[in-house]
Image 1 (cartoon, helix red, strand yellow):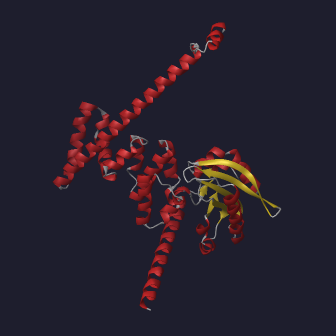
Image 2 (cartoon, one colour):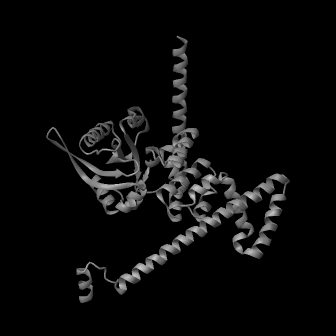
Image 3 (cartoon, rainbow, N blue to C red):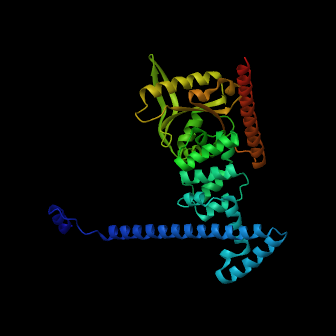
Length: 367
């Protein structure tokens, strides 16, 4: 202790204590080990893609019924005998599917820093290319581990985003922007419905109970909202003309660079909720928004929402989203049915809207 104080007085750095030295060296070893593991996994994933592409090319070139089955089976036996189970027939089929699902190696290469082979295995058997690209890019952006990815797929996150309700071409353009420019849009961030089963709310409860449960389970709530949300305040006081109003929850989204105001409603959405949120957003824009930030966004979370009411109010122009929240998750088959129906209806409405716009343009041109 005396030696350490003397060295410090002389402006010299004292030697590390045994505990500090051990901690520093352990950190160095673990960091290096993680780096080596990532490099090995990336190298193997690259190899798997090339092997899958080579086999697939050979099978497609022959175009003979049964040829593919026979060659993969025989090749798997030979390679497994020499290189182990990692190159068995089953593994080779994963590699072929990998090269099929991700046919552009540039995309694979851009994902390799964040996604492991285990991530790709979870993605390659998703039939919808749009859904596959969405989960791959969100994995990259939000740095999900494989467990989180599996949970997001199981909870049908893609079907709960506004992106899934858009025509395929528009959705593809938005994902391309995310891939090439890291540009995250509100349609990729907000969901509907939000699954809040982790709050443990049963039977009858009040709005303050929902808010208290969210604060108690903030980590789970932010995971459901999506990475990028930072909690700022609860019951944010907003004073206008001497009257006090209280915003339930205030967040900031780092990637969108926007304040996000969240209001909780026990019942169905009502038109008056829009006016209340508009007031909050205008106040936040005037008094809380900082230089370099975009306009605040509002999210009204309701126990239920009436689709036509929400549609007629056209609230996205005001930067407001309305979403339902479920405190109990439906059985998977029922959840799939409800979400697929919502996606189809939204796409039909968009198509009808575009058709009406084109008709108006033709009529105006004919005058």
